[in-house]
Length: 311
Image: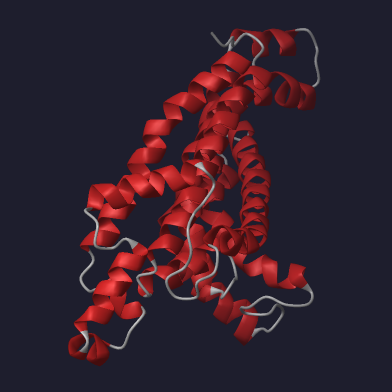
């Protein structure tokens, strides 16, 4: 398994390079001049030598491939550079925001997994019933809803119309502030998990070993939990790994809507200010999280099904 994990990490290097390269090029192609972050546009017109000095200081006068190569070398050394806007160490800035994003993402995954798996199993066991149909309709509705719209509706209904929870922000009573953004972020993933769980359970329930367990007199809850669900979880774990990209994209939107002080809000502010080092620092962390989660998903297969062996 260790050799397999190392091999996967090596294969993830081109993915990481591709993600950062695309981000780097896109930020480079955005109209405008990054040096205007440092000086007033009128001063830049009057004293162009000031702009040249700033470009030289930050390496912005180098060709794009030189800038990107320098960025990769610095990342390999753990150096993400400094913010153009605040001159703060980017790694420190991202790490300060990481706990808030981690809490939001973990809460969303916990909510979506609990509700999604439960709904999917119940719908599969009661296939064709009203509950099954209603559950899948709600799941389809959940997949179709844009995250920002759902967030705004929950904010208005639960935070303003019936002020049960704080509509946005982050402060004392942190759990109260966490509920709305985590539910918003988790609902779309909940719908995907519910549909996948139902489909996988229907396939597994029809297998010979499940019928054999029932024929031996094993009670139905044990048949479902011990024999059917464990084997049905493999595609569910896969969909969770695949949806991590959507989860991180949703975190950016959710944190912006609810003013949640995480990496998502940090990267939105950095993009609007053309703060390239901060944008790239956030992308690096998101890429690493995505790669590690998918590696963890692959390793989880062996736990769920001991027949799986890693070469």
